[in-house]
Image (cartoon, rainbow, N blue to C red; front, side, top):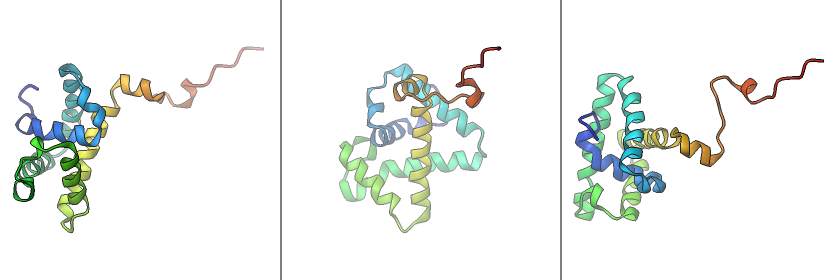
Length: 140
């Protein structure tokens, strides 16, 4: 990943992605860059404070498991990462819950907007709407 907003937290973001969408673990470097580019564009459209909150949450997420699991998030086994995320999404602290859902949403957006994933899922939506999916009527 080039020097971007997510660069300092790349390992954590990738660990979240592979936990939330296990299929993303098989992405090659170019495919991973495509996923990150989608996320970077989405974050670029947000206020600077929001971008900072995402990075801060990912930094916190990286070190939070040190207390209980004695390991950084990106170095945990997949089931341990899943447990950490599940605990945070049920946390009494609203900011933790929002952080998990926000980062999860970014991962979904980055992964599921890739054309090859949409084709594999049979997703055929278009900006042109339903008219693009209906055959045009033959003139009488």
